[in-house]
Image (cartoon, rainbow, N blue to C red):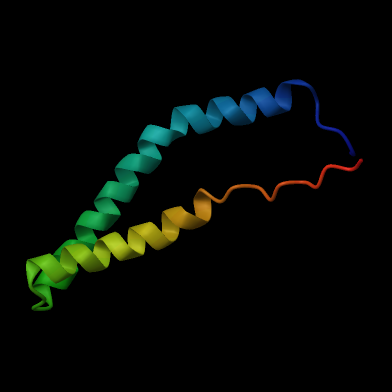
Length: 74
């Protein structure tokens, strides 16, 4: 199978749109658990929030990469 059926890209986009609230909710729960674990381990709240923000930034940075520009041939 070299080519996808015409409806496949639209169904992938639809599934992504429908699941995005669920993924955002699960991400928020995971971050809350991480903060609770850091505070429970004895870390002060502010460094725990900074550590959580750094981890989230590193994860989301990979998702938001811009494609490399293609050189224009003349």
